Image 1 (cartoon, rainbow, N blue to C red):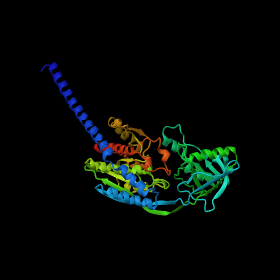
Image 2 (spheres, rainbow, N blue to C red; image 1 turned 180 degrees about the vertical axis):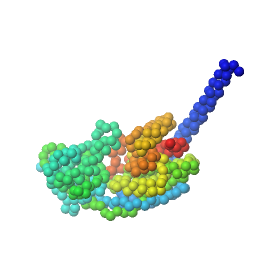
Image 3 (tube, rainbow, N blue to C red; image 1 turned 90 degrees about the horizontal axis):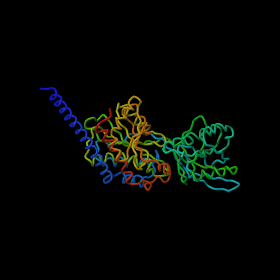
Image 4 (cartoon, rainbow, N blue to C red; image 1 turned 30 degrees about the vertical axis):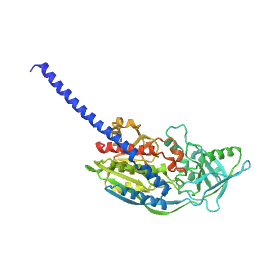
Length: 467
């Protein structure tokens, strides 16, 4: 055999082999692309998430941990999961804090310029009330906790008004929310440290409107537990203008209180994996919500997303290799009791979550996923996700780094990948923690696209795994 012929033969074998490998790769990618297309078709035509969310928000309503509505939501979602013929559906008991809002809040201002007027207000979650008689004091406006420290004794006997807006120039609204949240979470105790008698906070939204936003706060046990209310952004602007014109006195009355802890539960359903049952892919949201609205975007949407992932798998007759577990967590809003109980039990059992996906950013148009994980494995696992971008980009999905979800955050030490579903967030804080977070704020198609997006990434992780 001459050298030229031998070289030709070797090159022919090499190119033939490469063509076969490339063809196999193209076939696998085509198979995935067709299946993801089928996922979207099923979700948009046979999804149940919107009907479930309508039922949850309309017939049960707001689901603050420890209330009868939260208990009803636990029972209702368990019954819905029972209809899907899953391998396992069960409740995971946990004890949750029970905060009671009490009577309708009164925040009434009196000035020499405009007379008396009531502001639109809502007590902050976990706050103590003023008592039946209420409190009256001069208002002092600040922009930060550091400003309270700088004022020192000038705070004594006053009602502190935190009026730092969310940064409207920040494209990432969740970053803007985090940047302003310290005044709600820690503002009351900081004001009490210097002798304040009560606190008002500007509602956390980029919009100027008339709807006060509640949300959780926490007391430092070293200082008195003073009453705290959020007022609407329009009323925050009004109060700030009045303060520029002269002295403003406010009468506040709230009767909120913490009661004894109550028994509740996380709701869990799963399809057992056929090849790697000990590798768990979790999809979840939190079942509780604040009491003043009906918790449609926060976080009924995330719960029905997770439920619909299992429902759609059944409709597609998809048999997962890995265990797909839906977890509806209780008490994310004002304590994280359900998440903590889940982490505790999962770690005690020696479980491994190869991926945990949380939907807690609303039911708006999907934009992609944000990831987090243990430093030992995170970079490699996130990089593996990016190889699937060609399959997901046609649906407007991408990956970013830097976060996941509160209820799954405690699973980081298991060294799987933590993933937060990220829809478009520009309107989220219009509704977040308000009386208008109802089903009419949710677009059916956008909600269904969210379920399809989450199932698509579940499918890819289940099929190929994460090394």
